[in-house]
Length: 141
Image (tube, rainbow, N blue to C red; front, side):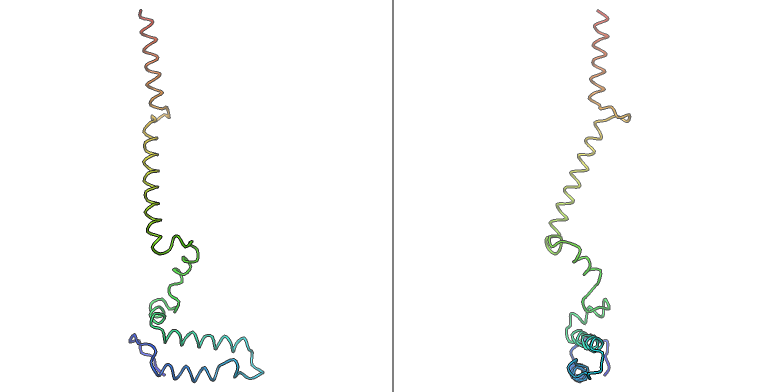
C-alpha cells in the first residue's frame, strides 16, 4: 500500500488494508503466549491510524500538526482554561478585561496627578500656602 500526499483519505485501498491488518492484529486473535499489553497497544495504534486516514479532519490535522487530534498546544490551553474563556465567550471576556484595564490606568493616572514629585498632595500644598499667607496677612495688620 502506498499513500500519496494529495489530500485524499479513506480510499478503498486503505479500508482493505485496515481490515486485513485488523484481523491479523486483533487482541482476540493473539496467541496465548503473546504479551497482551503489546498486542492491545499495536491494535490501538492500528485503529488510530485508520481513523486518521478515514476522517478528513483528522487527516488534515495529521498533515498540519503531525497529530490527528490537532495542535497539542491548543489542546493544553483548552484544558487549562475554564469554559468561559473558550469560544465566543472569550471575546466578551477580552472586551471586559480591556475596559477594566483602561479604567484602572485612568484612575491611577488621575490619582498620580494629584501629587507633586516629592509626594505631597497638591491640595495640601495649596492649603498650607493659603494658611501661611493668612498668617502673614494677620501679622501685617
